[in-house]
Every structure is written in structure tokens, then in C-alpha cells.
Length: 301
Ligand code: ZN
Image (cartoon, rainbow, N blue to C red; front, side, top):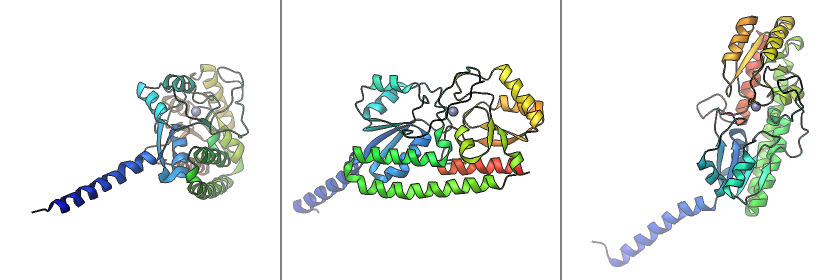
């Protein structure tokens, strides 16, 4: 039989245990990222001090995302919101207004040299290209901006955020070197591929693979018949060996182009979203590694 004293001790002990869990979870900084790639940056730099979540999940297209009512609550609950900016999340400012959030809204591409999308696509005008993460050097800018935002929101975690960021930045340096080495092994006259939408302009600038796409920098507007015909002619004229499908886009257009030109489907590229844990690209580093390997394989066969 338990004595009263014993019972009391046990109860206090359990209460202390119970408090340890939730208190810890409550103490973690709630950080919301607009899409999966930013979510991975936040996880890498925030570590276990951060309770991270994302709006647009794996394999989903942020260009045309339609926020759900639950998303306004996610924004309202967040202490820091991380966005890409450059017109990528056109739906975001309305969502922030609807949420009533007063949290800082961080633009993670701040300080990046912005690429203007080439004209000649359906809409023709010079849009800013939002896909800046497609170069590992730019990913370092994202990481530094996120580190600084986390420190500003949670100064007590400064040492942890700085250490995590330093470790992550050196991984990004290694990734950058790895992608450059993989491209260097591809014969120079074959460094040209077709992707669905114009999502790889920064990759092209950084690594010297030319990407040609029937669809512009947003997936919002469909490729016009004229753009598709232009690309089919270019593939035939330049004997471009491979076309790629994307994890966020309908594969049928690329399948049709492959059929009409005799170009091979070189595989799937991850442009604007990670995969889930079981896929080929559950992290940003996996995504870049997967893409360059797919390209190298398709172009060196
Ligand atoms: Zn895109």
C-alpha cells in the first residue's frame, strides 16, 4: 500500500515529467516557411530550437497555390514567417493580411542578384525569376538571411543558430563544388536540356547548363502553341538529346515534345519543391544532387 508521502512524491514526479515535454515544445520558436525548400533551410539552421512548418508541401506547386483557411491560422501562430519573395508566392500578402499576423515576414532572397526572365515567353515582359535557390551559392544567402532572422526572433539561441548555419554553409560550399565537378564531366557541346518551365535560370548562370523551357518563370500561364513549336524546332536543329519532366508539373507536354522530336525523357527534375521523406529529394542538398546527376547521366550517354 502506498503511503501518502509516497503518493505525493510520485505525483510531483509525474507532473514534473509531464511539464518537461510540453514546456519544451512551447519554448521552441514557431517558424513558418512558405514552401518545402525554405522549410528545409529553416530545419537545418533552426535545429531543435525551432518548431518549423510549411504552407506548400512536397511535390506541390507554390506558383499556383490556393491557401486554405487553416493556413491563415498557421500564419497567425508563427513568430517568424520565411518567404522566397520575387513574386513567387503571389498569394502570400493577402494571406498575411487575413491572418492578422504581426510576425516579421522575412524575404530570404534579400541580397541576391536577381535574374530577369528572358522575354519571348507567353507574356513577354521581363519578370523577376524567383527560383534563386537553384544555385548553391544563392542558397548560402538564403541560409544567412534565415540565420539572422532566427537570431533576431530568439536571441538566446544565437550561438546555436550560428553554429548550425556555419555547418550548413560549409555543406553548401561542398555541394556547389560537387555540382561544378559533375557539369565539368559533361562534354561542353552537350550541355543543353529542355525543362517544362523556366525554373533553372540560376542553375544555368551558376553551372553552365543551358535550359530551354516552353513555359515561363511561373507555371500560371500555360505554354502557347507557338512556344511549343519553337522548342520542337530548336530540339531538332540543335539535336538536344534530353527533355526533363518536373515533379510539380504535368508530364504530358514533355512526353509530347519527346515523341515529336525523338529526344529522350532524361528523367525527373525537382524544380520548385522537395519530395517527401521516401522520395529522391527530401532535402535541398538531395534535390541539387539528384538534378545534376540526372542531367549528367542523360547528357553523357
Ligand atoms: Zn517555378
